[in-house]
Amino acid sequence: MTKKNFDEIIKDSQDISNKWKQVPAPQRGEYIRLFGEELRQKKKELAETITKEARKIKTESLGEVQEAIDMCDFAVGLSRQLYGLTMPSERPNHRLQELWHPLGVVGCITAFNFPMAVFAWNFCLAAVCGNSIIWKPSPHSNECAKGIKEAWDKVSGEFSDLIQILEGGNEEAVSICKDARINLISATGSTQMGKELAPIVSARLGKLLLELGGNNAAIVCPSADLDLTIKGIAFSACGTTGQRCTSLRRLFVHKDIYDDCVSRLKQCFDELNIGCPSKDSSQIGPLISEDSFKTMQKTLNSLKNKNVSVIGGDRIEIEDPNEYYVKPALVLVKEIEEEMLSETFAPILYVKSYEDIKDAIHMQNNVKQGLSSSIFTNDIRESELFLSESGSDCGIANVNIGTSGAEIGGAFGGEKDTGGGRESGSDAWKNYMRRVTATVNYGEELPLAQGVEFDES
Ligand code: UN1
Image 1 (tube, helix red, strand yellow):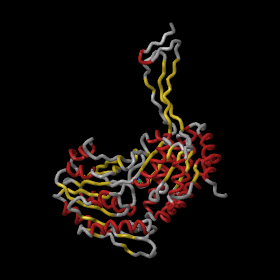
Image 2 (cartoon, protein in one colour; image 1 turned 90 degrees about the vertical axis):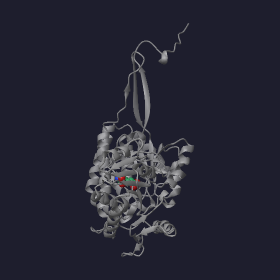
Image 3 (cartoon, helix red, strand yellow; image 1 turned 120 degrees about the horizontal axis):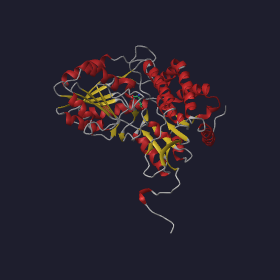
Image 4 (cartoon, helix red, strand yellow; image 1 turned 180 degrees about the vertical axis):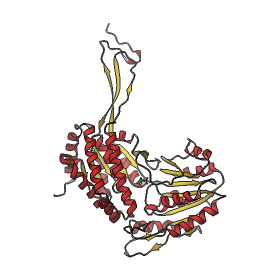
């Protein structure tokens, strides 16, 4: 098949969305059920594509396909639960009700690090809600996008066009943001990307759903179960080679357990298995690119120049000289360093001690980003404070779990520079629909709201 041009993609997407929206939602759900079955069958193969392109370790790649399958299951149930509220009307013989209708065409921009799951968050909801989708994957993950599209094509019959892939980079992302025929832009990527794209969409008063950078922190309290804590920290900080938006970047440890915690972390980081992601034993694969490696080194060098203690962070040459494997870095800071305030998409974990839980919460919140956060404690007062309105200001707040690895059932996203969007579970589906408030008068009179009188004289 010849490649479609931009206009053809939009036109085809609009046409199919006009047909698709007329399919009853539970029937749309049936297509998504079949799609989920197909993903189940192809799980291994799709995971291999993720490992090949995004260089994720096997178990994480399988987990990512599972996340897409979970989204299908969730969306199938949802297809019978797109509930609108009914409110009591203040007028006699009137019904006041919310109706939810599809938006039309959704533009979805995804990043290299979750090349299938984040698309599934968007697609499964968008589809059961009655929309078509134009997907611009990261230039690093075109094969993953093809794999997903093939699975959809297998089960979608006349609705194959529901997923349109627009390959490309920044220019293509800008084109879909500019185009008023696209009714929602859902974008995952860096805060900088969000700040470039958001004004373009806003200039046409378009709808936006943003899932941008994080700078996630965890607090380790004196009562924490350190075995569980170290495991949680290691997975969140080093898993996916520190390239999740939920990766753990900053750690605040109570001064009484600081030495113990740091020595255990050093040992744990030392023992992590760095190696080819398709090997079963590997826990950490390479960074996505040379650029990522350079950015990581730049951050570490600037810390070293200030005599901050940096442990690890060096390159390890394994097999292919064009791949950038690194030892995760532990950075022990006495004060908040400027580098900690921005997100370096690599395995760097800053560790600082604290005395008072309120200071720890303040340090945790005192960054521009607001995605994920954790507390490790067995003290209910501390965990409840952390979850209260005076606690974490993030969209995700975990107790005795690391910052990464959220389930699909909850809404996913964060505040401040993270963009404010919520995707995946809970009621995130509402982002993909327009709300109509319908008032129906089934009586013989025309009473006006708020008691206004307008009688003919
Ligand atoms: C991302 O990094 O953009 O919570 C998404 C997690 C995954 C999703 C991460 N379920 O870490």
